[in-house]
Structures are given as C-alpha cells and as structure tokens.
Amino acid sequence: MELVGLIFRKSNEFLGGNGVLIDLMKTFTRLFVLVVALNFTSSAFAREKNALTRTVAAKIISEANQVRNNEVNIGPMQKVDRKLDKSTTAKEGVCVTFIAPVIKNGGRRREVQTRTFFWDNEWGWYLYAIETVRGGEAIEVVSELKGRFEMR
Image 1 (cartoon, rainbow, N blue to C red):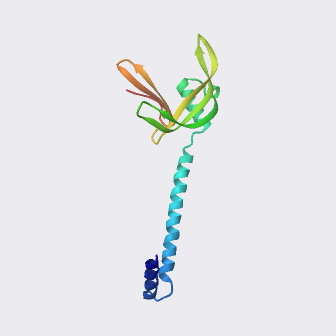
Image 2 (image 1 turned 120 degrees about the vertical axis):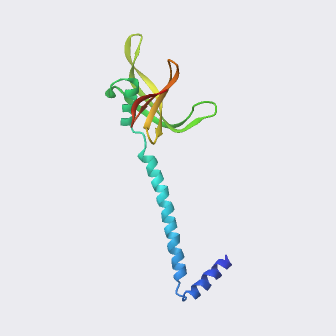
C-alpha cells in the first residue's frame, strides 16, 4: 500500500504537483462505480419488466383451456423452480393458481387449477403441454407473443 502511495506522489510531482493524477483516479473510480450501479439497475429492471401480470396470465390460460377470458379468475402467483425430469430443472417459473370452468361428466363446473408459466425472449410468457399424437409426441404451446402452436 505504501508503494502505491509513493507511486501516486511521484507521479503527482512529475505532473506538476497539483493533484491532477489523484483527481483523475477519483474520477475514474466514480465512473466505474456508476457503470456497475447502472448495469445492476438495468438488469433488475429488465427482470421486473418481464414480470408475469394477472392480465397476461388470464389471457394465456383462457386460450390454453379454450374458455372466455372473463371466466378465468387469477389467484396467487408464486415464483417456482420446476423439475422437468431426473436431470433437468427449469428455473424462475411462475406457478399460477386460478379458477376456470372445466367440463366434467357432461356438465360445466368451475374448479381451482394451477399452471406453471415460463419466460422465453421469443415467445414471452408461455404454457406448454406434452401430448401423444399420431406418430409420436408433440408439444402444444400457448404463448404471449406467438399465440397457440404445436411443435412436432
């Protein structure tokens, strides 16, 4: 530490002794702190900007369940990690509890259900279901930005 102080003092003497180097170092230090703070703030803002809203959740659920949007009532929403298989865990999903109509035994009845939403830069918020179709399996996706589609 004494060596650094000695270097600063000698450099300061070399530059005319008026503290230019020390002022320059203080300016760079402040600039560095500002850049780090802005980077942290912008990444936190980006995560918050993409937060799942109840309106978006209701829209996607109504499309997935093929019911009217006004028939879906969104309840609690919790951030969760979801185990997809023995070796894969999806991080930062949002589990949504909601009430929506279902058809059972020929009648229509409102039931409490849960679905886990995930985020993708291209799709926005989305739900998916793996289905068995003729010739194998397919993934049915309902997304905020691309709507309903099936991947085979």
